[in-house]
Length: 340
Ligand code: SF4
Figure (cartoon, rainbow, N blue to C red):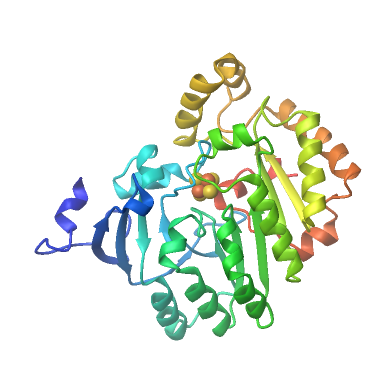
């Protein structure tokens, strides 16, 4: 691997590919606790990223304490970002995770010296800040505490039930700065969830996390996305999902159809060929125009979802949208017209 020359025992390490703000790889290990995983620990000079451009996310500030994600969702559109690190978008993305071990200290130093202070910082826009590694590294408490201390709003999107650990801290932070929390829960069929999101906590565990957040008096948006054509778009599945989300106390629910950009597309279609081969040709037709499903499908899905969400009183009113903005990831923002 190109990184080999940058290991700690190497004589002179420049920045890792794609981590130019980092001092270099300081340690690499795998552990019985996380069999099959490799953690590549780096120290970073900076924690904050500013999203370039004028798009919906343009100008937003983000923090990504981890690169790569053990949650291993087959459809994950962040996969391609691993190739910037000279790692592959498939198995490497799931099992070789870069950890910015000094992220809270770097953030503190950056906010102390920065003239331009972010109003709000988004976490979870690239990879999941509450993936299992967070149980070991405990980077989030430091990040949350630092942001609150500097008066910066916090917006977190996760599939990780580990967020429950930090609810007291988030409730405390919410007394000083705006805190927006969003849980991603897309699949309400246990076998399918284990197959398509093999490293994630169960749907039940994530619903329990939504409930715990609400019990602590905080709002919790749910991103029920992606909706997987012919796998999770049935009336029955959507109805079951919205019933469970309403029962858990979700403050708002957003859905969108599966987005298949390069990196995710190859990985997802390979999974589909293995697990649901009868659907492959239908998907090829549905995504013939690129990363988005056809407009007809999106319109059909929007109408179906609208009826179900009405039934469960989870309509997305403008007022609700304004008060509980979903911290949607950058890749979702690029397909914002399909978000409903
Ligand atoms: S949790 Fe999010 S970042 Fe992690 S693999 Fe799944 S979709 Fe990707």
